[in-house]
Image (cartoon, rainbow over all chains, first blue to last red; front, side, top):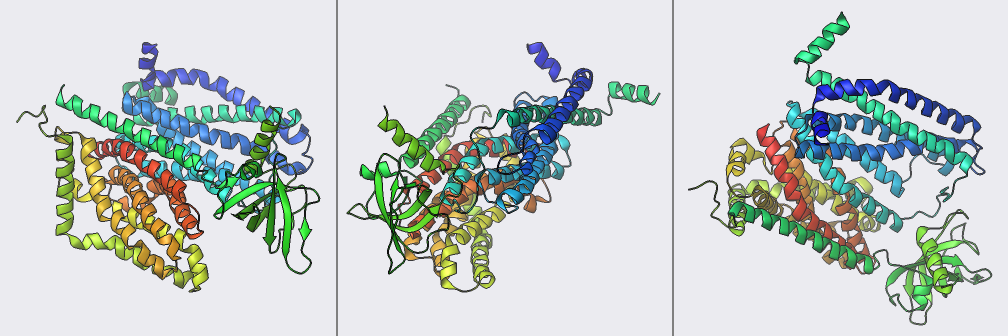
Length: 247
Length: 146
Length: 232
C-alpha cells in the first residue's frame, strides 16, 4: 500500500502507467458518450410537458455533477500535495482547475439554454443556479491565482490552500444560498422538478453521467501528462522520450 | 510539557471550542425557525408568535374563498389537511391563486387566530409544491396516521 | 535565549502583535480613514445612480450598505501584510519560535479594529443618508460588527496568498469575493428582518457561527499562505 503511494508520487511512474490506461479509458468514454447521446437525443421519449427541449438534460445534469466532483478532486489533491508534499498531487490539482471551470461553464450555459424554453428567461436566481455560479467563481479564483505567480511551485501551494479554503466554504455557501432563495421564492416561475423520472429517460441520463465522469478522467489524465512533461522537461527520461518520438 | 507542543495543543483546543460554538449557534438559529415559516398545524397548536411578521403556507381549502364585493378583501382557509387557518388579505391576488393551490402567505397572526396577510404568493405548477409546504403536509400526514 | 523554548505565553504574543500593529496604524492615521471615506463615497453614489426616491432607497439600503462595507473591507485588506512583507518583519514572524497561528490571528484582529469596526460604527450614519428605517439601525450595527470580523479574517487569507505578488489588488477580489457570500446573505437578512419588524436573532446567530468558524479556521489558512508567500 505504502509502496504504491510512494510510486504514485513519482511523475515518471505515473506518466508511464497512465499511458497504458489512457487508450482504454478513452475508448470507454467515447462508447458511453456516443451511446448516451444517441439514446437520449433520438430514442428517449419526449417529455409530456416540455417536449423535446428537455433533452438538454442529457448534457446539463452530467456537466453539473462533474463540475462538483471536479472541485472535490481538486481539493483532495491540494490536501495531499500540502500534507505529503507530493508533486504529482500538485500537478493534478493544477490541472483540475481549467477542466472544472470549463465544465461548470458548460453546465451554466446549457442551463440557460434550457431555461429559455422552460422558464421563458435565460437566467433565474434560483438556489442551485446561483450555487453553480459561485462554484464557477471559485474555479476562476484558483485559475487567476495560479496565473499570477511566476514561481509555479509556490503557485501550486497557494492554489492548494485556496482550494481547501473553498472546500470548507462550499457547503456553507450552498446552505446560505438555499436559505436565501427560500426567502425570496418568486411566485411566477414554473418549476419542472419531478421527483421520479421515467426509466426510459433515466437510463440514457445515467449513461451520460458515467460518460461525463470518464471524459473528466480522460481530460484530467491528458492534461496531467502534458503538465508532467513540461515540468520534467529537463530530466533524462523526458529527453529520452522526446528523442525517441522525434526519431 | 514542551512549550511548543503546549501552544499547539492550545490552538487545537481553540479550534474545537470554535467548532462547538458554531454548532451551538447554528442549532439555536435552526430551532428559532430561521425562515419564520409555520404550517397550519403549528399555528393551530399555538407555536407561532402572535402579532409579529411570519410566513405560513399550505393548500387553499376547496370552497373556502370568499371575496368581499365592496373591497379587495379576500378571505380563505389554508390547510395542511391536519389543521386549518383562516387568512384574510386585502389586495390583488396573483393570477394563479385558486382553490386547491399551494400558497405561501406573509403577514401577522392576530389574537383571534386570523392570519392577516400582507403578501400572498401562489405556486404555479400543480406537480410542484414549495418544499416547506410539502414537508408541512407530509409532517401533518405523519401525525395523523401513526 | 534558546530558540526552541518559547518563554512567552500565547496571550503575550497576541497582545504584543496587536499592540505593534495598532501603534503602526496610529503613526499612519491617514490610511485608517481611507476605507471609511470609500464607504461614504460609494454609498452616496447610489442615490445618484438609482434616483433620490426615499422609498426606493430605503428598500435597497440594507443591501447597498452591506455590499459597500464588504467592498471597503476587501479593498483595504490588500495592505494587511504588504508593509510587513516589504520590510521583512513577516519573515521574522515565521522565524520566531511562537506559533504563527496566534500572530496572524492578532494581525487580522488589529486589522478588523482598524477597518471593520469603524465601518460598523459609521454605518447608521450612512443608513440615514439612504433612508434606512430607524428600526433597522441596531441590527445594522450589530450584524456588521459580527460580520466584518469574518470578512476581515477571510480577506486576510486572500491578502496572505497575494502578498508576494506585484498585481495583488484585483486578484484578491477574485479570490475572496465568492467566500464572502454567506456573510453577505445573513448580514443583509438580519437588517432586512429588523426593518420588517421581525426577530433577527436567527441570522445574527448564524453570523456568530460563521465568526466562530472563521476565528478558529482562517488563521490556519492565513499562516499556511504566509509561509508560501514568504518562501516564494
